[in-house]
Length: 545
Image (spheres, one colour):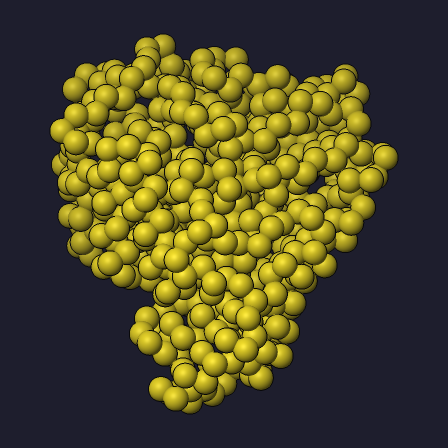
């Protein structure tokens, strides 16, 4: 994440929806705005949950957790993997057995050591369904995972495939090959936790003790989350600033106004009202680069007329072909988004414009009407088609635009359904209570097609165990993902991921819409703006005069 999950919200991560919440405060912090301070004030949104890494699957909390914690590996701007707390991760037995060696000397911000137990205890806690952690499915390939998903599982039960050999060595046995294991080991779900996290998880989530580039200071709900540089951090992401102040807003317009007024240093959420002007605004520095975020909307399996059957598939395909993605991108996103051609984003190696069946992502109103008529022959349509979104975010314009396309093309009642806050929206998504389609999307947790596909559409991620919030289940798709995870090389794995996508293009559990650019703006005093492989800002690189 983004963290970045934007999901069903990674997302996990995980989905992840880039949701905005909080009170929209524009109050200033003396430490953040003092001219002699190198603490950077940045746009933030109220996290949907407490700051517990294994339960963080949306952007508001993901951006914060990313800065506070350090995992086994980190990723560079091109998606390359680098050891962080890990000294080595060694695979044997066709990617079903891993031995992890840790570097010594790492400490949490309370002074306690980071050991093999810190990782294993955290993974066991997240994987155990009794703890209701949204990233449980990230551990689905480790031996013993299925036992931890049973309704009557003991909250203290652990993954049988995990063994602490000594303070610096972890032995991991998998129930199936998983070549992506070393890649996802840098995601939120895999972060280490100190003993204090398990003594009082609720308290810890409000005031986390971490091991990353920053140390937590305070969380004033709906106002700000503050952190300072961690002097004991030993990893790859050493901060060039003295700290971060995530100022929480309910409206990106308010944040942008604060930026222009000098009361905010940086934002990576440009409001719709500024998309045509932010790059020419001489009072700011503007950024618009290719990114890894996807924007979709999900049609859950439980809606009438949208089961995973012939009628449901015909209707999903008809709706998808009713939408003129290119025109909406030009008129609403103004050069900051490109029409989707698959379920991935361009920086991911399996991304392809040549997938069989991708014509369902192209505007074709006559074909859409034909498919809708075929569905009506199976079961006549009744009712309305709605797409829900959080009104405190940036989705209003594009949701209304695609609803108009669906209405005009298919001659049905299609409308947007605003929900007042992201908290309300996420609560309904996470609990499976949505009674309509809903906006979704993803910001990657790790640079692999596995993160976009397995975590969002595999059966192991359904039923509240991951980012598959629409509860899509396809044995054919699952089998293709297993083949990808068993592949001996990235090139071989990508072929299976692409074949899996071709199944998704038939079933369309979510409708791909656009890939979003990495857009941002800062005051003229800020420098060092960089983006990671997924298009998220590298907060540790920010500095100001």
